[in-house]
Image (cartoon, rainbow, N blue to C red; front, side, top):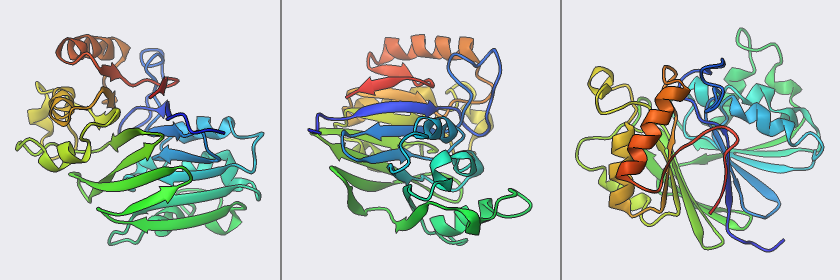
Length: 274
């Protein structure tokens, strides 16, 4: 298949904890999971929150799919989907899981801890798919099929990393779980320079951020400041606060678009061609 750029498919857009219910159904209650569809055989996925389960449901009839999961960090809302990802239990599936090495180890150790008592009844050794783990660090560059990937730094408790995927002349930056530093976020602005899409942690608002300082998250207003400074085309507000229902997100979306025409509130089911 010819490479014609990329598509983004949002499977989970919520932060911290899943929020099912009628007041969040339109934007969605699953936690972080975004697929980059490049037109090649390999599927690239940002984070493994509970939205990963729904992505797995679409792959039930494609057991030989090769999936590359780029983890920003190992906090539970970004890992909860792995035990419920259907391909992980299929012997013909090939999974590649990427993540940063920390005091507790890398992605392999983080996954083993999930598939262990008292957290989950199925132990790691019962996984039937072919799983390859890749430890990455800030500044690393590597290829996945037709795409090139660069690793960037984020500001988050215990650390987190950003990813920039370049494919078909288009680029998307995934910067979830980042707290702005008050100095203009120069490194992230440079990392996201001229990206076609920036997916940014917009959990809080400038009005409420003072009460959550140090929690490791940013605001939708800061997202716009970063997007403008970086010259990105499209901004997707992401990692929504669990207390923000659909009406709240509608209001944020209206305010955001007045300040930046390319701003969009990310929601489950949203598919965007870059």
